[in-house]
Length: 95
Image 1: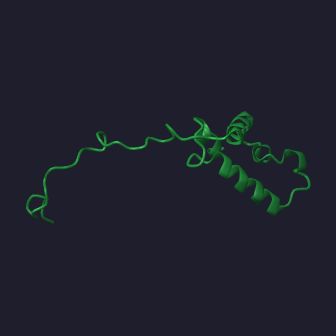
Image 2 (image 1 turned 90 degrees about the horizontal axis):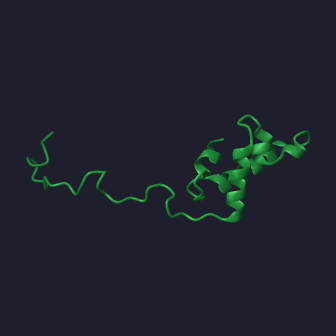
Image 3 (image 1 turned 30 degrees about the vertical axis):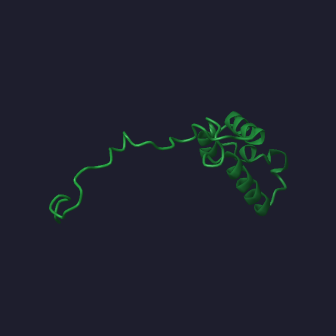
């Protein structure tokens, strides 16, 4: 395969990855009070307290699969780092 200069392409790069300006994570991303409360609540839970993480600890004896899925989706939307700019959203989402 020919090099960039041999193929006639411009040999100058437009900067290295270190020099380019990118949105680095959640620096300026906003979050709501509900999202903040969800992150803080999840961080207080133990990593194996699955029903508590989903916020359905009170009804874990009677909860259905559909209700678990619904709670998971809601929790995911509240704590997902792409949706939530809180500094610990990534950690809460991974729990």
